Amino acid sequence: MKNFLDIFSLKGKNVYIVGGLGLIGTAVSKSVAASGGKVVVLDLNVKKSKELLSWAGKNKFRLFFEYFDGGDLEGCEATLGNFVKKYGPMHVLVNCSYPRSHDWTQTFQKMTVRYVRENVDKHLNAYMWISRAAVLLMKKDKIKGSIINFGSTYGVVANDMTIYEGTPMFGEMTYCAIKGGVVNLNRFLASEFGKDQIRANCLCPGGIWDNQNPDFVKRYEKKALLKRMGKPQDIANAVVFLASDASSYITGTTFMVDGGWTAI
Image 1: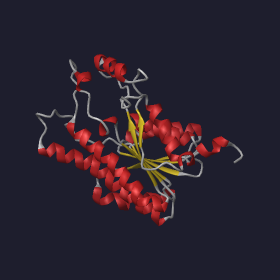
Image 2 (image 1 turned 60 degrees about the vertical axis):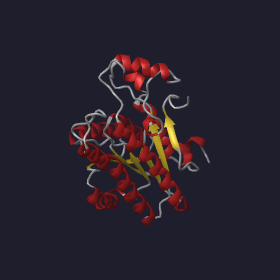
Image 3 (image 1 turned 45 degrees about the horizontal axis):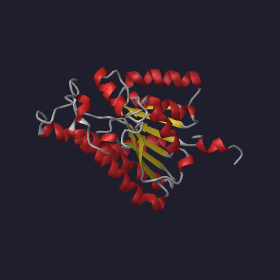
Image 4 (image 1 turned 45 degrees about the vertical axis):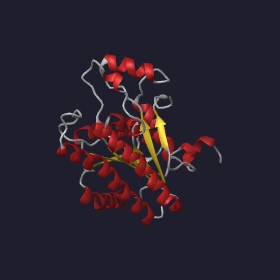
């Protein structure tokens, strides 16, 4: 190895990022591009894509955008296959999307069966079906790939309800169920496809600062061991690591990036 840092580079890797225009997704897309990867951003936000494409053009990064509805379970396999034909084999899949119904979020008392089913379908089932499509594409092209699905601290531990007291915010049951499912989905993928040298890791962000209620932020930061909320860049840094060959012996993990929130 001429330069130790080369192992952290994403040069030569095609990285497909579902939800690459969100709060965290934008930082992920930019960081992967800056690390040398060829980035294919898959998202619904056509308007926001223009800003990201302009940024990539100015910096001469290889970044492309395709409109993609991850909730179209019946069509996602063929759609991803067409993207691979257009941009090249999928070395890395990152799913940092946050699909949800128009009436998200609902309290435990007010949520309906329709609400639960819709959000489980849009989020958990979409993550599962997109992952399935990605694995099949990687196996077909004999790619030793990396799948990075986004979980959450609340897919690992329950909500601390005390941090919401006195604010309009509250814990959301469906979100916890969905993210708990994503965590174990990745364990299955790692177990089933390790023999194919396809890695699967679940990246679990802690709370990311986004102009939340000041009382919530104060309580959250008091509990976090690093005494602050996370930033999108904190999460993007971990994605680059898990996408790179520096993490080539890491699979099946629940990779916490939460400032120590779940440590105690």
